[in-house]
Image 1 (cartoon, one colour):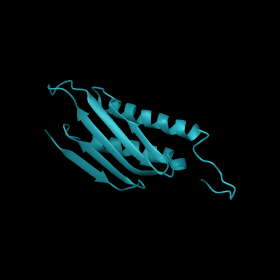
Image 2 (cartoon, rainbow, N blue to C red):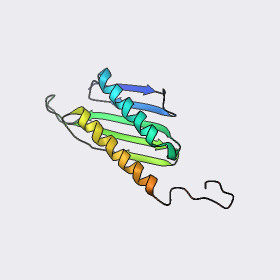
Image 3 (spheres, rainbow, N blue to C red):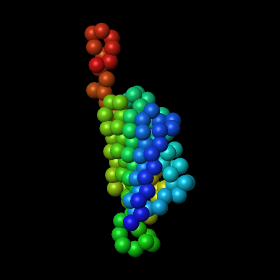
Image 4 (cartoon, helix red, strand yellow):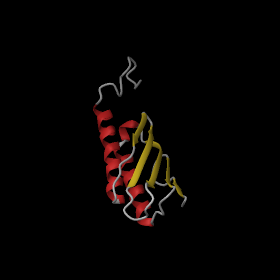
Length: 126
């Protein structure tokens, strides 16, 4: 079983960890994850940015050929957490897109929520 782990602290305000216990990730695959997280970071501005993001990429099954990719993402924001799990697809990029689309959907739902930020009597956020 291959073990790959990558940690970055580049443009993100927090830490990015990419773990791949059964998949050897190419540089292009790693770059795609970093780009998705950077886009999520841009979208999460109202949540005070991303403090940490943990991405796990795995392949299930016994046969090396045609095993679906599972992409699981856990993002810790300034105002809560987001999770997307088990987005299976034989195409790595499709699985990655599905996982981050689910996170963006959660993020936008949180943005529309009237309970996300309340203003106290002093005019500041509570």
